[in-house]
Length: 154
Image 1 (cartoon, rainbow, N blue to C red):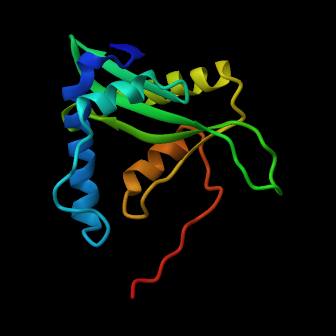
Image 2: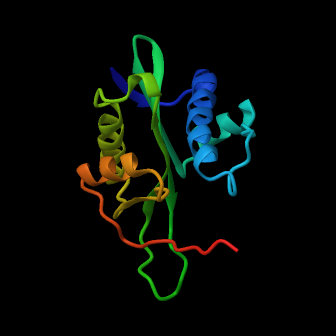
Image 3: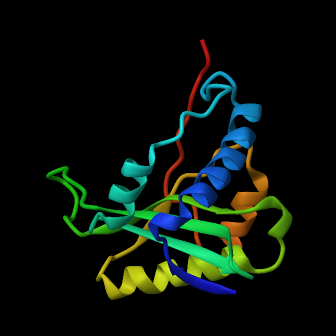
């Protein structure tokens, strides 16, 4: 398995991975997620993977993309917080038939190394409350809860 930067040729695999994740989200929170995922076009994908504020990694096994990790470089803007760049992981996903093989961990570690190279002070991400498997995964990797989003459905 190889972890590498995403390329324009990865568009179809990217869409397939997004669709898989979206299905889980829509199934658990149909009040938030639409049933049908609206995928970005190839031009938007190309722009994203070439944006200097994005790091887009692919896990490739036997010539196929089987996972991805997408991170956006952000700078907090509030006057009362330190202005240090952070990495916000938008997506880290592994194709369902390839899970349990360490691919997600390798993607995460490669992204962490890239974040260090970029001088980022931390990585953040959001996990939905229903996704217990993801919470355990990230805790095993050393992440911890920094804040919590609360809601009341009306």
